Length: 318
Image (cartoon, rainbow, N blue to C red):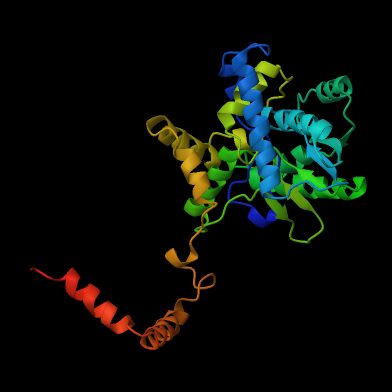
């Protein structure tokens, strides 16, 4: 994963494509195989549906794709560039990578890859790694500070490039994990939206992979043989709460296949009247609604008799 925006920041922030080893553990499919072609079509279809459902891309957009070097952001860039060639609207793509000066970071990998596929890009150097190491004790999770620093650099770069959208590689599993992180650790029923206006209203963040399962992305990335850059920051720390939540959800999915998808779909079908947030639903107005309904019923000929008859039938022992 690439970035968690300020409006939806959970206690333990989402990180750039953490857990990239998932792709390495999958058997590699041939890109000529029927299974790969089906997988490719499914991911493209799911991304296209998410883009359409949430109006993510408009004609003339300049989209900055945040590329971390992980499986999710590589997959996002591939699918977006393919969409760009066949979409009914015209939009630009520019890839952006934040070099956080993490020791051992292979600086040559992303420029070589992006030059090879002909995608315009910017590599932004900002030593956020040293700041995090200085400010956060070794036994503490660095996610929150790390993500805030990244956000600042990414938003500033988007403004400098004139980007109208910032595209991130978060997928369905990330969104469900964030929902539970906020539920368990922040006592809030909120998650990670497919499309978001930042707090200052200057940037629109989109997550085109919102409908895509992480397992499918891992299989796709493995077949595509992307030059994955492992992340040893933030989300890969074993004490990070996101890792705990991920393990819990994966356990559920193993026992009950389809549960993650069901949870995600639940976030698309919110019923405020069945929850307890008085700011979202006018519970105080229910009495007035009942009175108004009763008055309407009294004014309707036959309604009282029909109600009496149905009630009598319900409790009849004849």
